[in-house]
Length: 155
Image 1 (tube, helix red, strand yellow):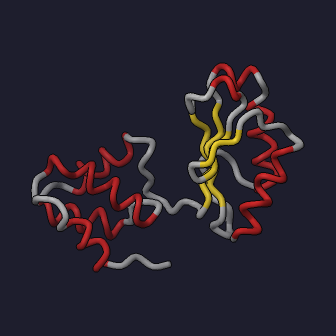
Image 2 (cartoon, one colour):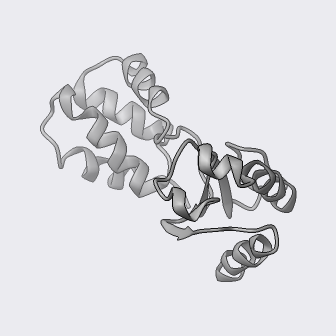
Image 3 (cartoon, rainbow, N blue to C red):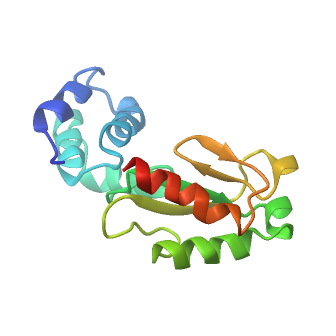
């Protein structure tokens, strides 16, 4: 899946040419490509007439933005207090072993990315994992492979 300059430009031109829209534009680029491609950052810099370094500073400040490609399926594993107490760290280790990646990485086939987050706001369901916006509560070591395999089979 390549990056289309046509798609980038259509996103840019949804907004007035003002720097105050840079974060919103980066969020739209992230939503479209699942990360912010270098070509998108360069086009945004040209469009807004602002230094590329300023945009990179903003993009690296926000954890929700990524400058490298993410997997088709993004796994967010909560490591907040309630989840941590109920074994989230063991689940994180299991996900890393099953997928062969560490937190912040993407599988070689581009299917999965793993992110540890501070809280998903579902403490009563701890430990909690979210895959592509679908919440899984009270996740156990036994349930984990089944959850991950359902996304593998989906492709």
